Image (cartoon, rainbow, N blue to C red; front, side, top):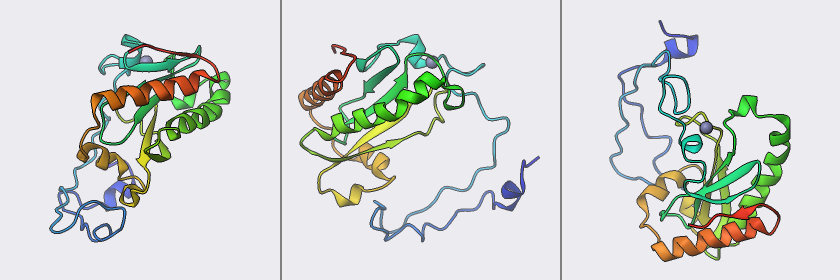
Length: 196
Ligand SMILES: [Zn+2]
């Protein structure tokens, strides 16, 4: 039933030790950290949003929902207020996965990543813009952008996503100003801002 040798080796039902992480400078927890018991694989995997049998694709159901900037190919959503100075999602306008993204979209993906990272880095509280592709929730290809605040060295690395959930949310007007700034910076090189 287990699909591979990798899966057959794993100790289902047991708790892994958090020891490799506790004390690491990028790990935001200390003390008695208890890891959840390791769950067995679920096969076939449940459908993601936008897949047959799954929930409808949120992007296709509401193409401009949360969108702050768009052009013919791409749009940028901003969710907020967040704990980080800025969190955004880049998506193609049409429904594609990474593996079937047409050549004309893959050709502009690199420049878009650079433009979005640069636009977010223009916010005065931001040192660096991280971006991640997880894709476990929705089939519609999407890249997450997370702004790491200047000087906040504990927020380096992948745990920045956990910090975003734990930090106090920025004020609504600051979020709106950051969203306007990022959208305007993107629009300088093409596309249009979308009013909120
Ligand atoms: Zn879609």
